[in-house]
Image (tube, rainbow, N blue to C red; front, top):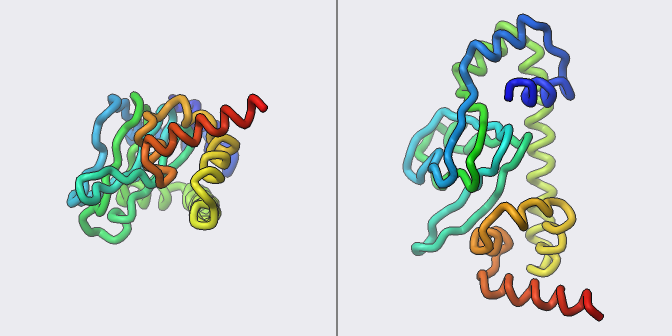
Length: 193
């Protein structure tokens, strides 16, 4: 799994053997079973996650109903806002599949960044990319109909259709599971014409 991480990092910075060994020595790799809650509403956390294999999701529970806000799959990172604000979490983070991730915290990152400044540069570049992507995704969600959201999902993240339970997918799209079923049926009918 460390080779997958090193391949990803190499898109931003090149690593020496000493830097690779420093990453491995920090013991950041975790295998987590499907259904495991990594973070619960009301919990405090210092952990940031990077998905090497698998899928995690963020969701709120509002009036007893889960509202999925995001899915993170291979080569995607998540730092819950509660890590930055040092407050209890407003939402949940759980594994949709058996997942292999890296788990780091601010102290660990500060130590590695002070020894190896290029990691700090990489983290800043990655943060900028993630922020821009989230803004684009948010704007697309706010300005589109449920049908357009589903088509966007088919185009940009088709793997989620097979990997994620339908009720979570519907919640992510902002619709009820029955509406998602009807939407899929309409699209299937249109494709037959």
